[in-house]
Length: 442
Image (cartoon, rainbow, N blue to C red; front, side, top):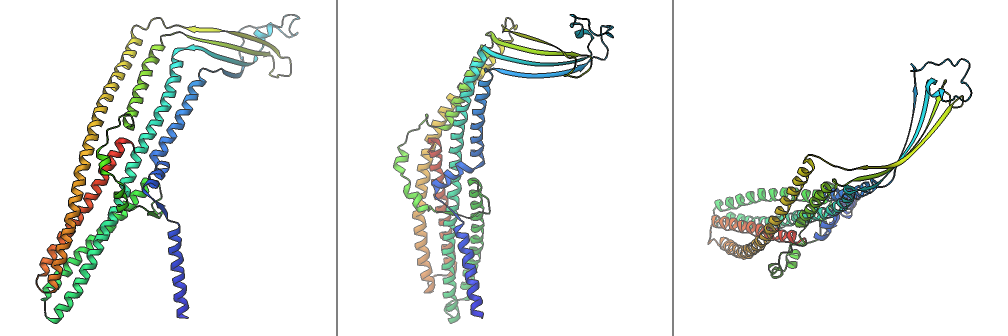
């Protein structure tokens, strides 16, 4: 019976673990970037802005299309201006008297208008189209920033895993050393202080390992947030640090030239400049005449008692025509508005020139920074190997009684410091490459 219970428990635990694994989403770095572009809130909002801009285009087009409005009203004249004695009814051939004598008036109207010419309307159509292009470019810029953000979060989780692996390996080595030292102390070959020193190292490692696991948990939640996932969801990262580093061609990166035409930040600024140019044209176009056609139809009923089916006298009227509005004098107001718009355009052109130079310098600095970080990474990798070799030699000597646990402790701290520098330098290299990718929109 006990065996059956244990078997059932194992099956249940296995099923739960299997369920969790099968529901976990797996992401390579590229898949994580693509997923975030579709689901991260800033990317989603940028997509909605594109849809909004397309609706704005039609809003501007519709301003130049026919507009038709219908309206109706009823009013009761409580105190008539004219007083007629109509006790015998309206005299034959004098129905017009109802217009003055009726106290119940109903009216229906139909009005139509069509814009024929408006300079600012034409510029407005151009501006709406340009704004739609601007939102597309802004979406590209947002996607570029999201890719960098997700990549950095992805790297941080992998770096945290690497750090935990280092610490767990060190923890296992210390446990083996403690076990061996206990035996030597028991035999009287070593003093108990040697054992206490190793136990102290183990205690420090436990604290460091716990902190590393908490840091990984935070990094994982941040990655889920940047992906647009629920924080409770399970994810698996299919790329490894080694695989990512192997794909990086340092020589190709160092040989790149800055692509100003492909930089999304510069493209957004250029689009803003173009919108300001159209703004100047819009204000200038307001000096041109505005021409519109109109048509109106109305039908009015005059009644002594409000009843559309009884003694209603209806009068209809139609009118149509063309209206023209010509701005003649604004006492310099319109000129001042145009001047302000031109100055705003000049400011944006200055900003664009500065941004081009600044981005070029940023790219040069990013290349130099990657070169420096890569050198630091190579040095840290060599230092870590040397520190591990020194620790292994010191541990071997400690087993033979040729070195103290204090020396083992020093060497272990040196290994931990080298591991920390190696992990940080690796993270720095990846982030330095990300900065170049962002500037090159890759």
